[in-house]
Image (cartoon, rainbow, N blue to C red; front, side, top):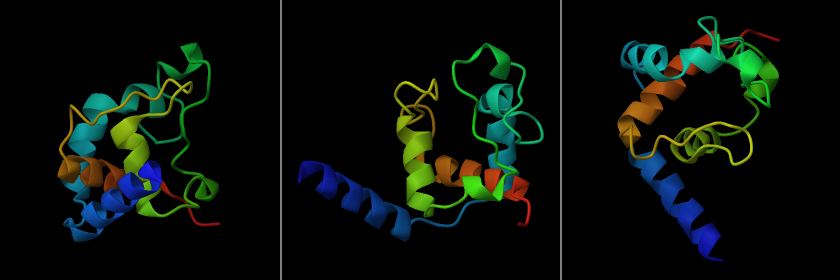
Length: 110
């Protein structure tokens, strides 16, 4: 019940927020995400081989099967056991949306 309330509050926060900006998102991505997810967004960054799990491949259309709130939650809170760190204390909600907006630019058509 509590988890459902938290997720709903997060969805409302996301819905009220301004859209992402890929120019700002790219700057953040190159500083925080590129080491694992790679310059091409394909999950082949320089740190990827040393990780227990392959980082998300943003070029794969199958990566993008959820609503934005799902991906925002991952950027914000990380993934336990998957080496994906959380950025809730590093990035503002707007910066998280900016990163997501940039990550979506890698998506290839099916």
